[in-house]
Length: 112
Length: 120
Image (tube, rainbow over all chains, first blue to last red; front, side, top):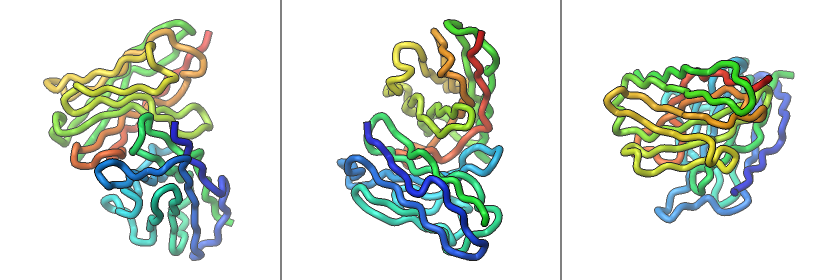
């Protein structure tokens, strides 16, 4: 199975400041069709997960442009340009290239 | 808009069975592939099972293979998860998640989840 490793696992941030989460996969996430199926999800406290980013860098519908995704191969990053109070929660990367699809452990973002 | 509503969770004894349902609305069910994803209390997300839009391709996590069966009925716009030989480690909130076939490799829409507790 592809192991997804996120860091840090806990991220205290100051409102208005940037934040960055790293996600590394144990093997390349480039699929045979040329796409890289690396996604990011946000889970606010007490809520279902919400999709943020698909195929590395594409924002899902309704996602603010302060969220951005980047990376390639095995190394990926989610960035929040200016953290807002509503961004508190756990962020998961997930790969949909290799079966079984797997998630990272999650990164808890909290306000300092 | 797309809506997914899970039901069927509850308390069951180890070794018992349970059938989860997911009612879909707001989209053409046959154009979407479907998944079950679970989250143990206080833990992260774990993908459980996938079924293609036509129902011909099915995958399971090793942790549930041979015990769980995913299925879908297009005429009812419904997804199911038959869970047999349940274990304590199956205790989790189970989410139904879908994506259009044009959006491979992700989970575009999620339900609110249903809690399954396996305990004697």
